[in-house]
Structure formats: structure tokens, C-alpha cells
Image: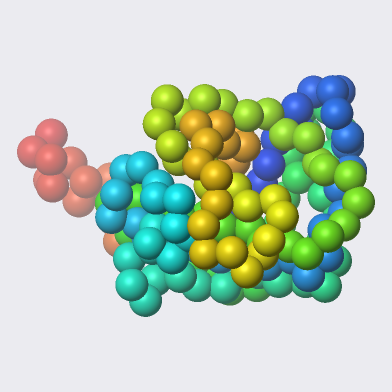
Length: 152
């Protein structure tokens, strides 16, 4: 799948509906482990961390239960097999865009709220509810070819 957009679902009417983030960057890459390490760099398969979006100021805003979508500068090819690492980085701003969260049951979130240059962060079982949209890289086939492929 080629990921072209990422979206966050606003958490109802609770919390802030708008957040502003300065020097905002979004990275994607692959991870070999199912749970995260508290060291940021250790979570990536070497050479897969890719900057897919950046802006000097990102405003995140949506109505209750609506999705806030960002179109990536560089679409990211995801093989659908390995674990996907999704990393946000910013330096200051105003408010926090409130999203629905879910408890993953294991450390699949890593946060660092104070020191951008720190190599480590705080592990969390909670993650924002996210949606990735894009295009699937399937070979075009007719219905007859599909039936033949699966012996239907």
C-alpha cells in the first residue's frame, strides 16, 4: 500500500478542537519488534526512517468526531507485513488537538514531551486513533482471472 494521507479522529467534543504545532515533521518507517523500546532510534529497522511531511506550522482542527487529515509530501510505501513506525516531531505550539485514544495492551506508543534531542522517551500503551489512506498496489485483473486464480 502506498500511504498518501494520515488522519486523526477528534475525540468528541471534549478537550481542544484545535492545536498548533511549530516546526512539525512526520516520519514513517518499519520496525521489527511488536512493542517499542524507550530509545527512539532502536525502534526503526535501519535505513527505513523516512521524512514524509513537514511544515513550519501545522494547525490540527476538526469538529466533534470528525477526521483531521494531512496529505503527505512524500507518499510512503508500506509492505503490509512489517510493523509500521509513525513518528511526530514538533517544537512548541499552542493547545493540543484532542483525539480518541485506544489502549493497545502493550507499549506501542513512545512520547517525549520536554526534550526533542533526547534519545529516549516514555513508553505508553495508549495511542491516538489513526487512519491511513492511499492506494493498493494490486495487479489489475478481470473477474474471470480472479475466478481462475482461486479455482472458483
